[in-house]
Each structure stands twice: as structure tokens, then as C-alpha cells.
Image (cartoon, rainbow, N blue to C red; front, side, top):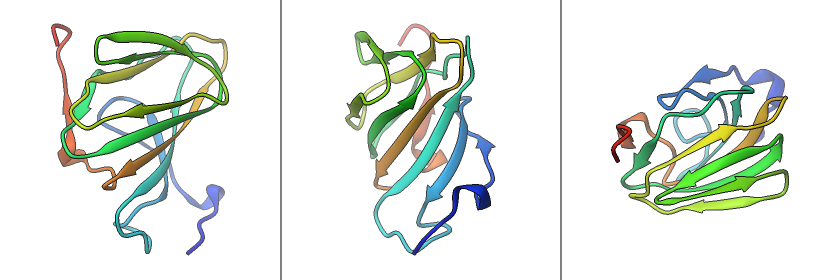
Length: 122
């Protein structure tokens, strides 16, 4: 199955990022994974959250950011890929002047039900 970027409507997800589900079992023939583009505008940070079942990969396409993964915080830039194991609290901040664009691959596929927002103390 093939999708075209221009045909996929964006939406705001629970963490506050702008998402385009490029491939998802709810809408396409994928079975066990999803692929989405996330956009985090300049001076924005996604809400800290955790997926209890889903393993996630972030691959930075454009922009500059600061990734918080568990108890670690580090810079990310185009070409970087970050593994987010299930059960790991994470968020990403745009530290640059243009949109931070990230490909997000989830297995099993992304689900709002598997996304738990975390408070600042977590």
C-alpha cells in the first residue's frame, strides 16, 4: 500500500505535536506498526508521556532539538535516530528557529490508549 504525504491530514496528538499518520493499521494495510511525521514548532516542547506497550523510534529529519528520555537529556539533529523502549517517559523540545520534523515509527502501532501523559515530577 502507498500513501502520499499531501493526502494525509495532520492532527494534534496527546503530547501536543502535529502528526501525520503516513501508515497506520487503522487506515491502511499495515499490521503491527505505524509510521508518522511529527512536527514540533519552534520554542515548543511535547508533553512528557509514556507508551506502556509500544516501542518507538524517532528519526530527526530537520531542525534542532533536545530529547528527554527517561532520566537523560541530549541534543538531537538531522540524521539522529533515538530508540524509545516501552515504559520510558520521553518528550522532545524544539531548540531551533524552524520546525523540528521527526519520523516516528511505532510497534505495535501508535494508539492514544497506550499514551499516558506524565506530570513534571515523573
